[in-house]
Length: 476
Ligand SMILES: [Zn+2]
Image (cartoon, rainbow, N blue to C red; front, side):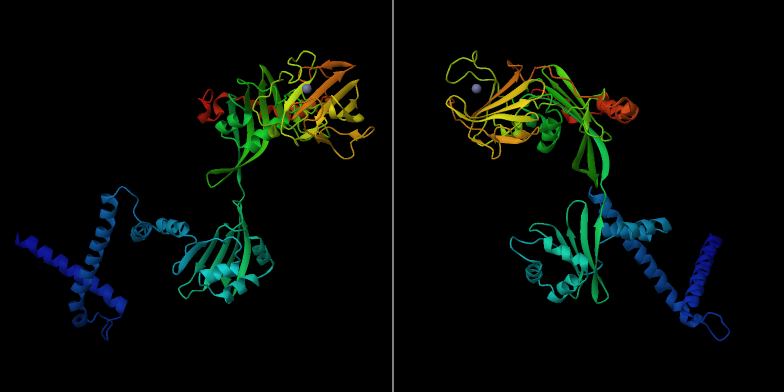
């Protein structure tokens, strides 16, 4: 027993002596021979050891209850402190890398211009030095960009304890920040851009009400729905022909930043099933002329006639089937398609040609007739006005505006009466067979197939569609 106690005392003495030596070395408390000055050191050792022990206890106490008592993550400073206390060098590196912008002292102002406010008013409002703003404005050419800050846009200002502006950053858009950092007595401006990450997404939906509702349900914006309709505007009349049960599937480029989808890029491939018939489009940009969308065989989707003479987005009703003629009470003698649309809606030439008649008659109201190649004529009736310059002999291109929807002539409400006549016979513009467009030349076919096959395969891959669409049908 005594020997154990003796050993204990020996260890304590040896430990105290060791600590004393280190302390002596550190503090240079040495006598003339270079040995530790024990008279000074011995009384100090217990104090130092005691303080060290107390520090360890405090750290442990501060660290553990915060972690164990709440389920939330411990405050960042606490984590940093605990990690810094750990001996591994790599932890210290992580902590350094993970602590970027926030200034160690001072404060950060998250602000934006109020309506009609300038940066100098913002500086006044935040009680910042006009001299600092002057320094920023005079920092160089990048400062000129500050003139285009609009109200509501995010401005971050870091201010030191002395109320000096150390950094001003303006978030231009999701991709770009313009910032000015204090360097010496002045400021340096720079433009920081963050390139998006491009991914590809597949979206699909079945139409229950209209294309916009279906697109929204699929997670697409209206703008994408309009582009989708544009792709198929030579194949589908989106005003009168879209029906519940129609469906689409789109492969589209997505631009991501910081784990968020920020923007849709180009449509890469798409399918639109209209009344049981599926139209397929794939993007191919290496073809001179012929547009950028092709069917899988290499024929351009662009054709000599648009399916509808109006933009479907301008027509209010989701479905616009041919109506019973308001005056005759039957559609039998009435050849053509009636599009109910607000007065003033632009009317487009569905194909290139030459105007043969543009004028007014009692039944037609203001009307335009265009002669196209292949013995085809298109007629546009009841216009509120004919576009300036549209008269007999005028050449028009596909999509040119020729007039606006109205209710002139024998008409009871604003609508466009549109006729499609082939060799003098009225035809249904939706179902009429037209000459097919010229395919991609044989020499370019290999390149076309090489470029488009992966897109079409991706579009058709079964398991990559958006999970939220599983129950898309029948919700609205
Ligand atoms: Zn009509």
